[in-house]
Image (cartoon, rainbow, N blue to C red; front, side, top):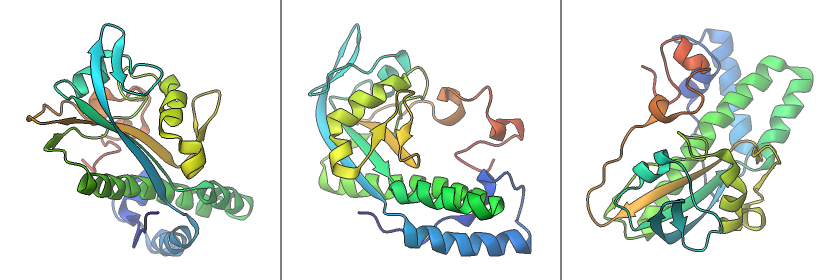
Length: 225
């Protein structure tokens, strides 16, 4: 289990589409909702380290039934001999909280939704720090998720089976390759004993870059610039 001492309200406000500092009423709502989210969600994660190999049909993860396909992930973990596959979730309580709020107050539901989005990214950061406090990884790449670049979302099912994520943290995937609970993230991190080129990050490899609302306002979902 992961403990969140606070959730970034600045990030949540940005996800809400707010430019600059939120006004007093929105700030007060974010304060209320932030406390509610922290008291309700149960962040948790699972991971597995495995050897990887490169072949014409993709990157093979030892113990995983299907290879990771596409040039983006191959380039991302080029030079690595092992990888960590991880999954992080805020639990089903996050989805329930968002739905309950939507019945009575759509503004609060939006605030809670965006706070949960900020929270799951913070949970990923904490999980990664804990994982690599236990694993000897002289050099590693950043997190690369299904859906980035040309790594297809349909790898999610094999990803979760490899991690036994349904039994261990209650994480499943729909026929449309969406994670349930929705406030969840899967990712692969390459490990090497030599310095690695971490490559492009953010908009450059995102499959949503052409329709992203952040990009239309000159921003992105990884930073404020």
